[in-house]
Length: 342
Image (cartoon, rainbow, N blue to C red; front, side, top):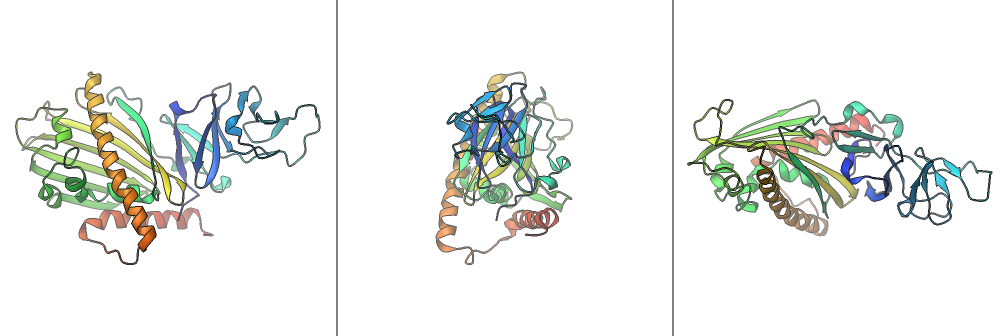
């Protein structure tokens, strides 16, 4: 299932320029581009004349020109120019998608345009905040988009999948974490605290701790596909709110955008909250998270293959699935509220 009446991250703002960008979103071919005024637009990636991709076209003063026969469409999808012809047929238009730029992100609404509500777009002021230097990237994943949040919200996989990066190789640390799980109007909030734990390799690569640490993980899931994460560590027994260096702080923005029924774009940004005046510190934690994403991608894609082959009926849940299952219920609730006819 793909929830279509929702805002999905189409691209980072920095990805979209006057050079058209092709991207498949919710099974729709989309072209993203900035007009000469700098405003971003999203159209169906197919000319209404002969069907050629507009992503092979050129941005011009009036919009985007199809480079097959020179037909021009404005940013609302209406044909405004046909070479050697003044009459423009009524059907000479292409679908335009609502697109909003916010917090260095471009959000697209693929479903019913009349239902597009800008207030549903996630707030994330950390992009552009100099106190949280960050880097934005994405990874294509050959799996259903909801598997991204499933993976993030079951933190017990950290010791097994990420033993050499963000997890640490001690499963008991994750299995015995103090945790709190609460529904929110948008999804859920999941908090975990691991006391007196060895710092995982990713933390040690960034900060020199004298011994064990108290680790926290906070996850806010916003239906249907975004997870805001804040993780960190301080010397064991220290006060999280007043502790100074050595301490580790990291924020990760995660959002999965369905490309097809079994593939997605995994957008993520990593923000460094320690040694913020040192670009190398940001580079190191980004590299550590990149390595963890590669590890996750391996399992998620393999999981997708087996579920497609063998079905979901044979699968069972454990206590560690509580946050994941609450998130799935939140997605279903969102879908009922915003797509009542489905």
